[in-house]
Amino acid sequence: MGSQEPNEQAGSPARSGAHTGRRTLLGAAVLGAGGAVLGLSGTASADPRGGGGGLRSLPRPTVIGHRGASGYRPEHTLGAYQLALDLGADIVEAGDLVPTKDGHLVCRHEPEIGGTTDVARHPEFADRKRTKSLDGVPTTGWFTEDFTLAELKTLRATERIPANRPHNTLYDGRWAIPTFEEVLTWQQEQTRKRGKQVWIYPELKHPTYFRAQGLALEERVAKVLRKHRRDRRNSPVVLQSFEPTSIERLNRLVDNPLVVLLSGANTRPWDFVESGDPRTVADLVKPAGLREIAAYADGIGPTLDLVIPKDASGNLTRPSTLVADAHKVGLLLHPYTLRNENPFLPPAFRKGTDADAYGDVFGLYRTYFATGIDGVFTDQPDTALLARADFVGD
Image (cartoon, rainbow, N blue to C red; front, side, top):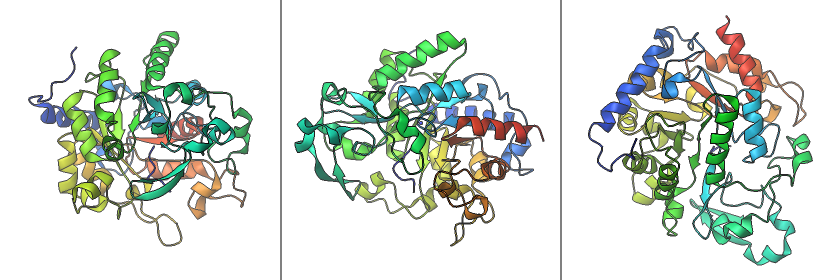
């Protein structure tokens, strides 16, 4: 999931009826969950089985392992992805996709890898450290686009937030940086071993930034998906991005389910900044903005604050109309990110003051599930599954 926080033939570029098809299919998915999901009763679906085929085949609310089971293992490693499946996640956000210097796609939370690998302990790469403007933010560190894949493979992944997850540091150095192709191979192997389809939910990171460097992401992702025959309407690969025009581009390249990620209400997607589009996320979540998104995407991934805003003290207020408004135009909602640790919870849900202690996250899940969301990104999939079982069983 994105940096904006505090996943048969290839589709032709001019798919006739593609927009209507997306809205019809997703509208059916929402309707299939019952009137409650449309906000008529204010609760999520009481049917965990979902519908049949594609995204509709997954349970609801869908549990999405955020960067794997990143509450327990260093994020975006095969270890984190594997554990997410073992814990029961319905989908694994396997891949925040960034390119290497030689054009390969690898899985890192950000192109800057100083905080998620041991690169700083490699003296041979000391001269690669530099400061760049990443979507308008000066960022210092080591960037994937300055390394070949062979060079990146000499590094090992480390825990990104050790203060909150000291137990994860036990696994520092155990796993290499996976490529997108390795993830697709892993997905196929796990599907075969488990006897059921494994789903993944990769995100394209900073598409405008990389396109300016001659490392366009959309075409590279489409090429890899076609190679693995996972570029189709019911392919178990959901593609997401914080840049709406990136999703529009993908809509012309592949038939996969597509999701537009949405950050804070007062922010602007970076592709809008670069193109001079004055709209903010607040404009995109209005009915007109949602109708526009529904023409080329299947869903939205809003920050949780767009579903239930917080007051100045960080406490939850009343739910917004976003869930009902999005469902009216056939869009699914997969907000991000629920985590167990105190610092990531509203004050009323915290227990104690320890940075790595768990709060009343079950109460928080119940509150968000009651809004009618279709799924949620979580760092602890096992907790989410128990919360869903509690909620659906009511």
